[in-house]
Image 1 (cartoon, each protein chain N blue to C red):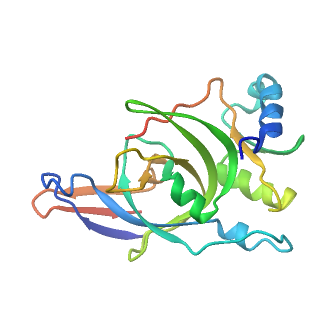
Image 2 (image 1 turned 90 degrees about the horizontal axis):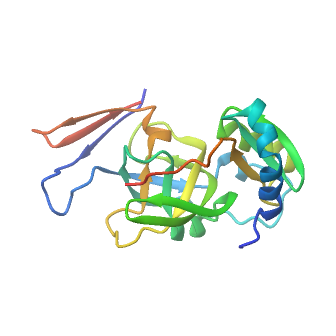
Length: 74
Length: 148
């Protein structure tokens, strides 16, 4: 479980600066090294991921921000 | 337009939080996917959720995320909470509100984490959903009214 989406996370990190220039705030969907696209909402990114990759394996959805968002809970 | 009313007495020690029942499951889109074998989908699970204006995502106990086999879309990472941080992952799922006419959110991002020392709820409804709601609290009637 600890390696789940590790490869996709690495792809995201490697392209983060480049994507930040043109896709800040958007969601990107990735499986292995393949990018399904950039989307304005998490729901759109998920729908596109299912269409492109199916559900046989997990795919990564990440929002592109300068810094990682911090969730303040409770 | 959906509607829900929930009783809430903030002065009662057993009922200090405004909570609503939610059903958590995988996204309908995922369950309707043709041709993918090996996925086992569970029935939606009903959990108690706190209405939390301080949180952005929907957050659910890791125990329930595992039980529902929610489709994970990010690796585990640190989420800051008051008093520390929790290990959390992100999932795509469906959140609906039984016995109300509030609309369901599907697919929606659900963050899983461990709720330490909290037995009264196992889910938080954050602003990802609250931004679609109008919430009023009648202190005399001790009633929270939600419209979406």
